[in-house]
Length: 313
Image 1: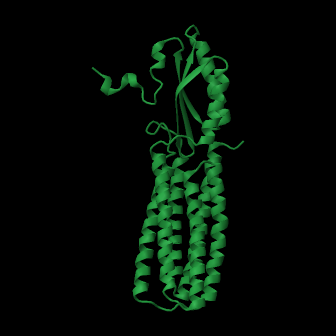
Image 2: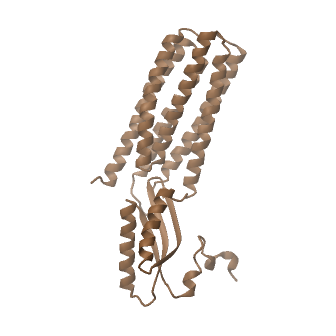
Image 3: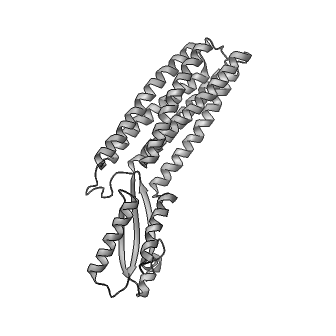
């Protein structure tokens, strides 16, 4: 059985893989850009520099997230991963700005590209490396519910599409002799990574705002609820949230008022255990209420209307 500590160590290894990949790809693309003098290839290399910075930040975020809850942060540090994704999205905008400035300068002062065959071959090798590692990180991020690894994988795959576009565009320059295509390709690269950056910022923002669990997780929770409802137990005020790899479920449980405290406690223990069986590692918070008491039915909304400030007085 893999412990939580071992699980986090595995994720950190993925982050180191992303860093190593970025270093290798930057070196390859840098050589390709230097040989050809292509601003399109240079823009591709600049995006890979952002990948490296983002991968280092991802490593720091995963190391922070692995620390256990304490008195200062009783819910843990899972949201550190969202900060990583937000920084990565912001870094993409920096790369886009550099690319656009370089491309505009080249449009105003065009220069011929050279030794395209060698340069494009080097970029092709870097693209294959990015594709393999990007798919691996994306798969690992989904499997381990890690927004940091998903962001890293998404960024690498975006880099792949960027490189493919650059290869096609710069290749056309060599075939047609139209030098203006080189900076135009670079501009398109800049637009493409801006779109990716917006997506990463949106995902990190939703995570920081306590987005609910994904539909597939909610379906598993609903299945457990239905099993208990068949026993006469009622539920309401169900809330869920994710904090990186951590998952939280909050729900009110309504049982007959004649039950003893021990009977209610035993039911909650069994219920929380069943939720954890469906969602390994989940933290479930339950609130027990008497089924017959009308007050128990006044707090079904996500915000408890009984205790709102505007109802005071």
